Length: 354
Ligand SMILES: Nc1ncnc2c1ncn2[C@@H]1O[C@H](COP(=O)(O)O)[C@@H](O)[C@H]1OP(=O)(O)O
Ligand SMILES: [Mg+2]
Ligand SMILES: [Mg+2]
Ligand SMILES: [Mg+2]
Image (cartoon, rainbow, N blue to C red):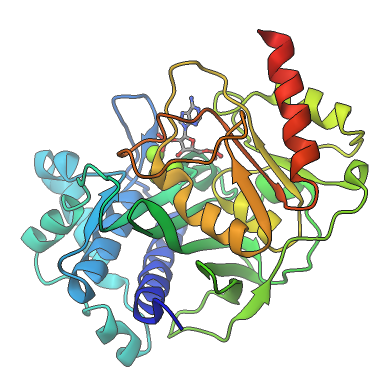
């Protein structure tokens, strides 16, 4: 199997970091700050990024990382730094062999800051670059809804290995999606999944565990024959994608079921396992550039589960031009069989707005 070591490292790193984020959710303080773009960040985001980068650098010291966060806030605030330090030292896999494979605990507070600051790669079309979103859907995380810990290896600008840790999705790949999934998904019994894919080798899911890796099972998108029966997923936040355009597209496709709204790349995971069918992310702003860490892992997982993903104009997403998808607008993901019909309607709806 190709990229075996990369996949195992990514799975263990994401598993350990996802457990850290769960521990933050149940603790009293989430240490929430507001970033310069008005979006929230928590000690969970900082801790998860530091742990994952430390894991990658332990196994693949030459690889670059494009990570969402950096250590500026922690360097400026000792209390915050200590909170994150306590978190990362407590986040250990119970299986010591698995824990050793990703380098064991971070050794010092300096090493913590260094790991957190090692996600500053500019990205690009050459070589091995990891794209990391330590908590995707921080707003969902804060409200107890869906969020995901997202990691992908891009090789020469192409997402090649992808892992998503989704602590609030049901373990059962067949569990139906309903609108409560995005709103009140407490991480109780039967919840917590790791999704993964390697290019050319299919996609899988496995239960999240506190120890090593559980056994995986193959996942695939649903074979949609009647598009009007499809379930479509979209963001909770109306500021992240156009609910209005998405409703028009669904209506033109004859879809009568309400959309399932959830935060984060849990949407990619949910359609990849056939719980939902379509993911529509139509742009709300002309200037917003989607970030590569918000899509790389989800895209390879959907592709390997039998789906196609492009932007809203039907253009392939170009992950090789830097930290953002600046040549693309929006995202459309669907099973291959119905993709042409979906993108035709997306173009119609966008065209009517010109
Ligand atoms: N104007 C925007 N358009 C699209 N996505 C956005 C916008 N602003 C923030 N985001 C990003 O959307 C992602 C969440 O998407 P979703 O709505 O699918 O859960 C987050 O990573 C968030 O970034 P950030 O991390 O800065 O909050
Ligand atoms: Mg994100
Ligand atoms: Mg994030
Ligand atoms: Mg963020």
